Length: 150
Image (cartoon, rainbow, N blue to C red; front, side, top):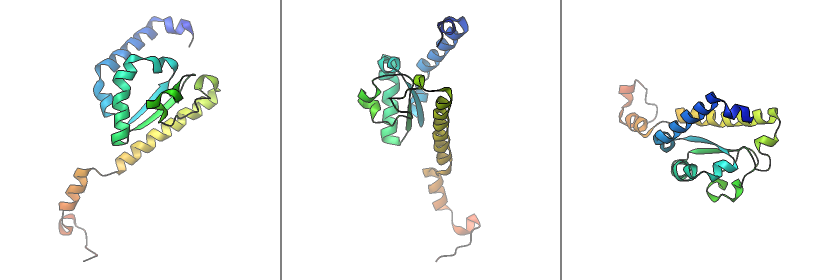
């Protein structure tokens, strides 16, 4: 990113607001069903990421099947980071975003969007335990259904 953009006051305010949102909203990380990680050397070096963001995301992936989508933004030690290396990166660590053409970058973003949409669609189709329990307590006559099998 151009240094003039990073030093612009509106950019600094946006980043400050973004960071404030991260620090004040741990519930979102705890409840995440899909996480997109933009991986760089700075990301991997962040104490905040290692201690506050990754543990609940990795726990959700292991225990609840949350989907973690690492996008390799720039060269990093992603493959040497055991907690993350178990997650399949969207793009190859040997082909980070910074080395790709704009078109190839867009293709990766579309792949991520498709994965998120697929997860959202399957989550909507999957009945909750409450839905199943309620369906089991309704008799065929209450639901208006005709019973075909004895």
